[in-house]
Each structure stands twice: as C-alpha cells, then as structure tokens.
Length: 226
Ligand SMILES: Nc1ncnc2c1ncn2[C@@H]1O[C@H](COP(=O)(O)OP(=O)(O)O)[C@@H](O)[C@H]1O
Ligand SMILES: [Mg+2]
Image 1 (cartoon, rainbow, N blue to C red):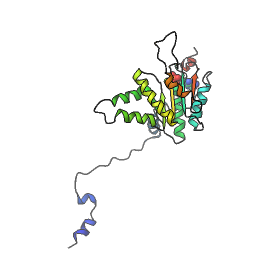
Image 2 (image 1 turned 120 degrees about the vertical axis):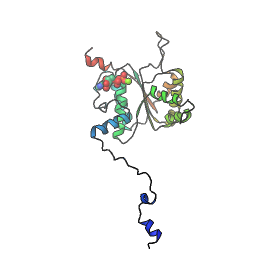
Image 3 (image 1 turned 90 degrees about the vertical axis):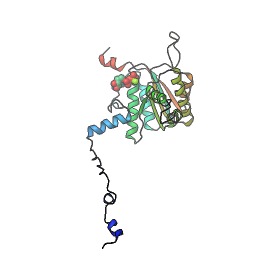
Image 4 (image 1 turned 30 degrees about the vertical axis):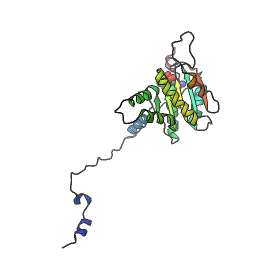
C-alpha cells in the first residue's frame, strides 16, 4: 500500500479539495479597433484623431498651440498652463492632443472636465461613500498630472478648484486648465462668472506657469465658412 503523503503529492490541488469547478474566462483578444476604443476611453478623449498634427493653423490660436505642444513635450521649466477664450477655438482639442502626446511618451494622463471632478467630489460627501472627500481632494491636489477642461462652476466648486490649484502650484505639478470664462469681471455684465484672481494669479508666475488667451474664432463656424 502506498504511503498517504506520496498519494497526496501525486494529486492536483483540485483533486485534494474537490469543490465547484471554477471556469476561468478565456482571455479575449481585442481587435485593433477595440484596443483603440479602449485607449480613447481611458484617456478621456472624444477622438484619437484630435492630435497636434491634426490641429489646423487658425489665426489667433498660435500661442495656445505652441504652449500645449511645449508642456506636452516635457521640456519646459514651467509646468502649469491656463488657456481661456471663446467657444470652439480648439481648447478641448488641444487638451486631448496633449493627453495623446503624453501617452506616446509613455505617460498617462486622462482629460477630466470640471463638472466631472466636481460630481465625483460631491459623491464623496454622502455617508455611504467608500472614499472620503479629503481623500479625493488629495488625489486631485497631488496627482502627478492633471488636465482639467472647461473650468466653470458654483462658488463651492471654485473653492474646491482653488484648493487644488494652490496645492499643485506649491508642488510645481503638471497642471492644465482651460475655460470659456474670462479672467476678470465683465463691467457690462457683472453677474457673469469669471475665474477668480486667486486662481489666475498662480498662472501669472512666469517661472511656474503660462497664461494664454486663445483668440481663435469658433472652428465649427470657420469650417462652415461663416
Ligand atoms: N485649429 C483646429 N484645427 C482642427 N480642428 C479644430 C481646430 N479648432 C477646433 N477644432 C475642432 O472643432 C471642434 C470644436 O473645438 P473644441 O476643441 O471643442 O473647442 P473649445 O473646447 O475651445 O470650445 C472640435 O471638433 C475640434 O476638434
Ligand atoms: Mg471645450
């Protein structure tokens, strides 16, 4: 008769402790199109075609294009960029081009929008949230890179943004903000929101940041010829 130890040695783990058979899912091979779609979603971009190469030279957008390209190259001393200006002149396109260019350099940064991160912060206030407001704030404050498109919001939301920018400015962290809002009050329309000087002043420091007014016209209108 065989020794019990030897018998056990010759059995596979499944035979020693019989139980429900676990069926491992077959690894699914994604098609090249599916891989691109996965990448598009993980970068938070509307199209992987929104690259610097596909950005047409439109008058008024030169400075914004050059600044986005420079920060994406990783070769600038300054690491913070605020670009503001009218609707449709390529701010989102350039945020997306930056995320794509970083990805090509092996660096990951998702394009976030202000409403999305504010929604996430508000979700944390509920008592059943698995992450505290402070923890999520800290993530946005100290993430290695942050691209935040479409800055706008309520007073509370701007307070949150200010905390984030203060921390990122102190730490000299890669930060891009874009907005359709102006950086000063409109005397003709004082109730119109604007980005407060408390945020803007951090982008005026030439050693650390760049502040650019994108003066291009609405590209959708240009395409339509109007
Ligand atoms: N200079 C440009 N060259 C090519 N496409 C552009 C250019 N500017 C804007 N677009 C395209 O026009 C549309 C609107 O631009 P978008 O980046 O969303 O503007 P904004 O964020 O400033 O409102 C997008 O489809 C974008 O890809
Ligand atoms: Mg936009």
